[in-house]
Image (tube, rainbow, N blue to C red; front, side):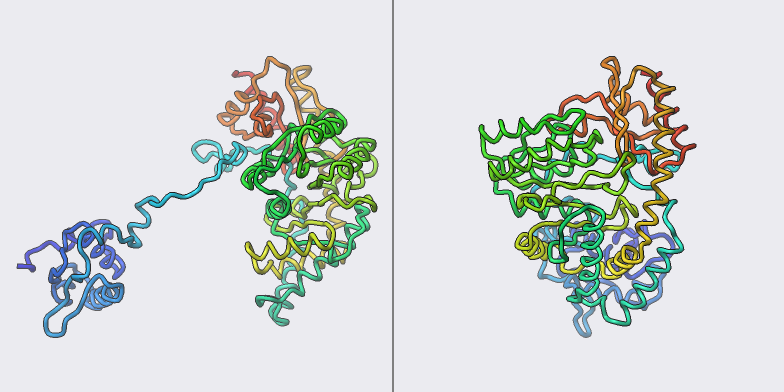
Length: 498
């Protein structure tokens, strides 16, 4: 008889503990039906009997039966009882996916998985990055501890209050985006000499989206795209994912070797070149003025585009910052990509693309396939921070700290490694590029550093061709001077153990 069955075991409820919920009972029924332990048409005990056997409230069983019946696993027949649905045969049940099975099974149909460079494997083994004792030489992120928290709180509260009152949080309301574009246009004109109007700016949720939008608008599968021999890995990963073939151009102490671009164009047409001329990523060198002029002339002669990423323009410690390539009033080939994340931190997702109005219109249209609405509250807050001068004041205050931290890092490295390293002091930016003598295995050094409680990126991660590079990019801005001293000490210990 059904009463002698151990329903707790049959329904596999041992994991549920003392308190069994109706969800546990439903999940148990689904598993038992799927495994064939409850065949189609099998009768279940009445709700009183099941409640007594499972030692739960009858209401719990009633709700479970009703839920399973609604989902089609059970059927209730008046004056007869509750039964497993006969609509299921065992083969059909095994192809059904329950909430529990969803956690236990892999996705079965074929799907496409992109091949990403090692740069994206950011977490060290065993989740060491989640350990607060771990120190992290990042790629050049700002220090969130220097943010003017009281000012940010005040502006965000005001933006939220006004947004709720004025309906800016509704779909289709673009007022905040319009205000941010106007503020950015004024800022870029004043600080970067970019001759832009709000209609020349496409807002994005970070640099990655900006690069993807710009590249997707240009690339046809099979196109040739040029990047610098050391470059930003997410960029060339995007280009390859869109079907482009990636070529490289060399760099030296004065930026990319522009004359090589002319030779590449004569061999094979190129669609665009992606570069970071202000503070080259990762080497931090700046593109010399004469090479800038030659690059723009080559773009006109050969008809290729330039995607210029200017990721940390505001932080420049020697002289005045270089004007972007996009600031040339005669050029029509440059797409300018920037971000506010290096000013406020990566959690403030605000990137932008600057270009001719016809291009921006296309980018905004394409962007609707990804997102239909930006963060209206954040956009309003950022616009006010720019207009009120708070962003400019924050950059001025934090730049003093970052300049000091660069000096501390340089001093520590020279004392710890001496003539085993060489550096070119950057004109600006939030990271330092360090090259080692040939006797140092930098890949092994990066791996050994993990055991010393330090995460650092090997220079090989920045090579589109997978070459072995004996350099490290050391972001110094996010660590205090004392933290930098400890981080370099850990790097030296890792070196000593190789």
